Amino acid sequence: MLKKQIIVFIILGILTVIIDYIVYSSLLYTFRDEGISGLYIDIFSKALGFLSGTIFAYFTNKYITFKNQKYYGKTLFKFITLYITTLLINVLVNSSTINILYLIDIESNSVFKIDANDIYLFAFLAATGFSATLNFIGMKWFVFYNIKTNNK
Image (tube, rainbow, N blue to C red; front, side, top):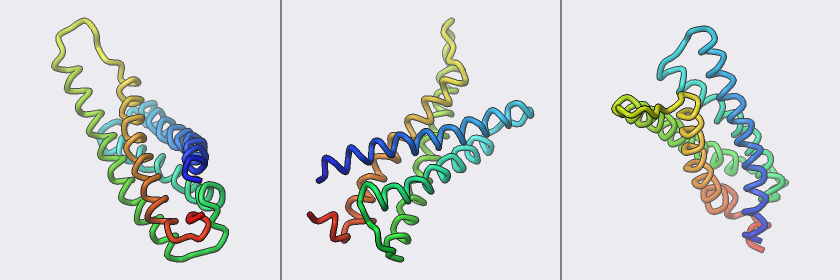
């Protein structure tokens, strides 16, 4: 059962990441085209991308991965608590990675320079990796733990 849940979680997670990335990158490019940049734009774009994916993840994991067909107020509360925590971690890892890579790029005197798009993509992937791992662990053993279908 766990192996199947992990596989389904990964497949749905890929779709969640695609939603997250489309919103994130669309906002970044829109702001850049308007000449707006800065740390707050990075944070805002990452947070909205993550939240868009979160809405998708809640319903797909609730009904498909963990097969929780009933409404449980505690489950929704636990899910929101988990995702607020992982949202903060996701945004922190994303922003920290961007800042670190820009510092490395600035400090580097080599001919090789890091492209800004690569920095944002790498930061997005690092943040997603951290939060996806924490989300599976949290959903499996915190959010949906007491659901009868999970104990088979």
